[in-house]
Length: 108
Image (cartoon, rainbow, N blue to C red):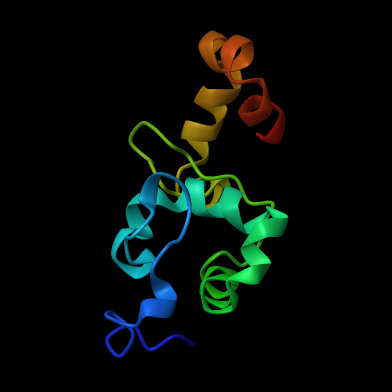
């Protein structure tokens, strides 16, 4: 387990790429889980050992899908299914999700 307090200023947690370059992953992870889930699935992330280990612990299943909008923003589909199955049913029948968010709809 990562000791978050001890590592808040540790430079190994500073992101070296993309839109969050120069920021500490620990500070911004909770608000950007879907972005970091994507990063975790990319080959480049393995060269950043500490960040990779942090993400591996935080994102138990790299294939998990996180909502990036709506009332369950940054919650996983697994979590939503366990806590509000009616919302999953709503998403499955929503025309916008079916037509514009095909990847999400297929994972429902």
